[in-house]
Image 1 (cartoon, rainbow, N blue to C red):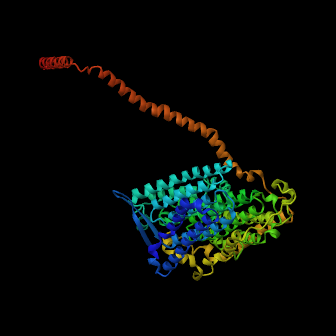
Image 2 (cartoon, rainbow, N blue to C red):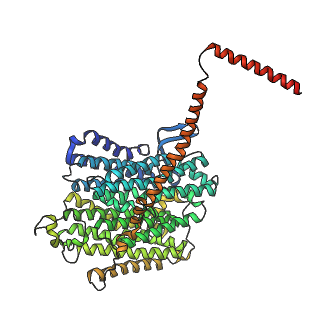
Image 3 (tube, rainbow, N blue to C red):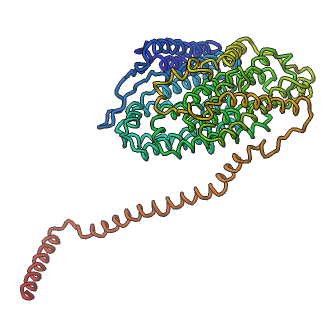
Length: 637
């Protein structure tokens, strides 16, 4: 099966091509079924490759398939090659597995949309691009997928482009990610200049063997971190992700849960040997940016009223936790939380889509309430997702978040405390969302006329094709934590699986106070999660305290607005000034030299009359001038 790893990205690509050629002919729902089958086929191949790798000794869990020589230019030899190892196959498993469920869900969600086939065309292309990103054997193949998911995110976020807000959100995502792309390109230039290769194996080997200097390693890792901040929505480049909610809900689940936003975490884990030999301040910066992003986004989520915006800021916050793990040297914990987050966040987004579908496209949580009675399956599965993200044991999110906090404490108690506060806020705002949507009083009757129902408006449960993925994801959100339990080394299944990839960079905290007292920290995490839930329950259900939802938080601390005002005000003037300088000074200098040469040539051209007599006279004058020169020189000497 290892020689068939090319099928993993090839099947979604085949689906894209088939829908491109025959999408209109297939129509609804056949084009959606075709797209879902292609991603499901990719998942089946990924599972087969996983078991084959698992059957091999640890040191042999690495296979490269080379399709062809892509860039054979001098010393720059880059192959279009795919890498099957524990990290890439882990990524492929949940990208294709959850991608299959999202495709199935989308068949029901997008029912009746006039661009049904085009939607699945974009989805298959997106999955193909993501698989190219995670399975690339070198940075250039990864960058191909990196740019592919960026382009597809633009298509999908602005899918309903007739809405101005959707069109603007798509452009915002595309432009913001270009900033991060600059960092990835600079990292490639530095890596090739230092090691002569773009292959991950070559770059990481140079780091492990000492052939790569600390300063160069720091530059490569820093540039890749800038790229990761753009793709994985970290401060200061997170602003595109909340607006990405303008896309259809399956897009939100695909981008925010299992695929695109995890790309930055994946790349940083892939080059962990480079990060390990970098200067100590770089991992600290990554951890600080991660925990600051986590706290910042959590405070904003507390005051949001759009059901999808709460989840969007929650995603930014959870990604911050993953970067806190990266900066703390906890690469296993980062991947662990990435996988569990994919389970429960996909569940929450698809659950929110089910609510929106049942509420006739209403997204304001203030117009919901008591939906658990009318939407029992959606409510039950959503509650499981809530318990998982809130960090309640034994649900998946508790185990992965606790492991990150353990490593954070070992690195710095300050990082741990900020992470703990963020965990408290997460439990608080997610409980708030569940209460506002599924419990309390039914507020949708008060707004029935807004939907043209004239008093007959009634929410309804979603069709089975949408509910089935929710049930599967709910199950994974319950048992997903079993892949990495803290009780003993025998329960560290994910760590043993990833060991060939992360062994060099993984931090060793076995002799730290945090590790020796991990059960105390485990108990503190449980108390914090339950405290957040209890506080939210007292505020939003029992009404014992007034809700604290200041406008500054609802407006995202005016960060996004501040950037927009700057770009439209002083920034626009600065860009106009740069344009003027380029046009007047730079282009003026170039054009001035051209005109000077042109004028001088025109003057000299006048002497070229074409008359032989003129040329003979000039030659004669030249001879006389030479004779005079030699005569005068001889007299003087």
